[in-house]
Amino acid sequence: MDSELQKQHDNMKAYDMIMHLRQLYPKQARYERFEISKALFQARLTEGSPIGPHVLKMIVYVETLERLGFPLDQELATNLILQSLPDSYSQFVMNYSMSEHNKPLPKLLNMLRIAE
Image (cartoon, rainbow, N blue to C red; front, side, top):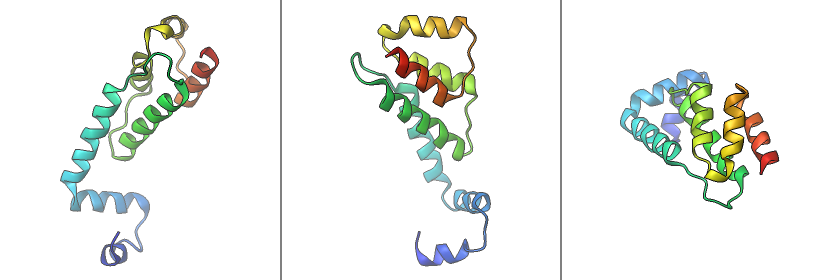
């Protein structure tokens, strides 16, 4: 942030600062939301790749969208992660869906690491 812009935000709380910056740079925020949601919806784990970095990356995308004012429902975020997995995780996905788990995303990550 340049010094003049920083001075404008010195006495603002984080939320107010974000809202002000969005007003100043609406097209950049919109483009960022587009790129992040595109990456999230197109994410796929390739067979044999480690699950941890993949799911962590997806969690960061979900959290970034929330920070940009576009929170995803917990169930939708979970479904996106499960749908990004290769066929070798189909048994896990079926068991998870049948047991009606609605775990927070970090717990889902831990369950997937155990299943790996």
